[in-house]
Length: 92
Image 1 (cartoon, rainbow, N blue to C red):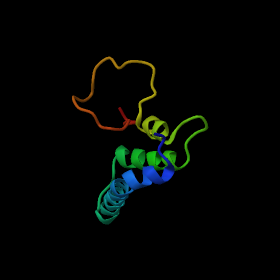
Image 2 (cartoon, helix red, strand yellow; image 1 turned 120 degrees about the horizontal axis):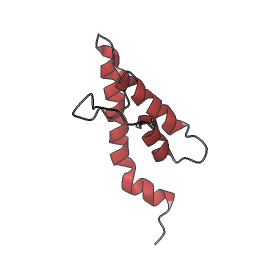
Image 3 (cartoon, one colour; image 1 turned 30 degrees about the horizontal axis):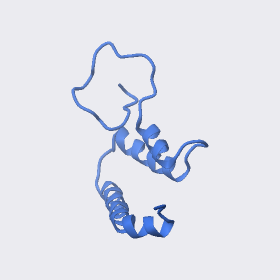
Image 4 (cartoon, rainbow, N blue to C red; image 1 turned 90 degrees about the vertical axis):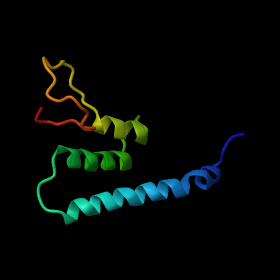
């Protein structure tokens, strides 16, 4: 059976509505608190922009993935951290 757009909405709308509200709440918390955000905040905003306006030939999913990905070609000699940041730190 091929699902229609209505079928997709019926199945996934409420879950994704919640996710969107959760993202909005995260951004509101960032706005309300003092201090400087690090590179992850800018990466998050860039990913939201990429989702809204994906480059030609990319799906929205691919655009978001690319926005968070490290596109460097040369390996580092040593790791600067022992965990994942979830976004590329331009300073490392």
